[in-house]
Image (cartoon, rainbow, N blue to C red):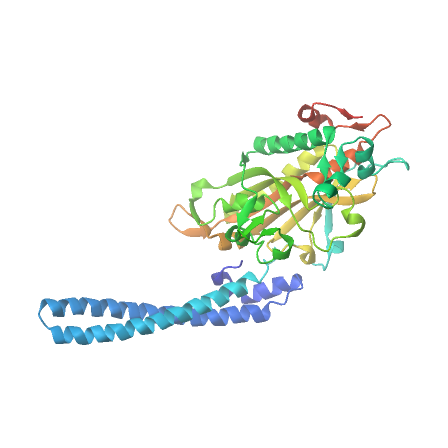
Length: 423
């Protein structure tokens, strides 16, 4: 969320940038600023009362020492009244701070100044397209047909066990999935990311810290009895490793990677977009997360984009990179680039990665700061990206590399699968 000091000092900028998102923030921002004025007045009064209370406590002690009991008792009565007044002020302060927090959490991140204006995904800007766009024969099969033909993914069996959106990977399909996970992790580790294995269930504080609550409450699976949430992405537990942490500037950057299954309700999804592996309730993903200083965050974002680009090039998949417009930007993101691979059989683009920079939007929620060499405390800038999401990568490999003899495995992946053909 946006910091109070940033809202206080950048009213017009916030309103202008959020207008690009088609989000009218004027009333919210003005109310926060008004409440913040009240908040600071109460704090000033409380500090004055505290100073007065400390003075009275000192005088009471002096009177008792000098046997001036009458004067001491009078001051004790005054102290009692002062404490009662302070308690009321504290309660009022708590109420105002709670209201400010609720208002701040309802405001999305402000788009970076380079984010193109637009109202939907149709306004996203293509900034790169690879030249290896495949043109399959007219008889080419979709990945769900090929999965059945080669007995590598069973959608019916998954539906039997859990429901639609929970496929079962079998035989070489399971080995392909496992090989991709190891390939992605090794590529990330080679690029300087440290691997973590993290819980797949998180508490509400963790979901709030990364901005998933309350924004995506309805999209997350929730265990009400334990009040735990199944993670929608490894970003949530990885970033929360550093919640309520004060780092040293020398600790940064911190680069993390981790593999987890991901769980999303995907309420309201329907049609061809959910066919086969296109949209699932449970899927595997390898994530990269970076904690950076403000100065280095943009450079780090560029490095992450290049890193994902190189992985897709190694997989020989046709892909493009889109710069998301203001209307398609996620709630917590300031700037996002999406990677999409081309599905040769479906003749459509499928998103496989989002690489985002959040500035200090998440760290404000996480209470994540670092101390500079001069002793100043600053908010950490957070970034994350899919590196990569597996279902559509698997779909792309199955469809784009189909031959009369079977499905070829990209050369870079063979050491991880142990085979070069699915037949």
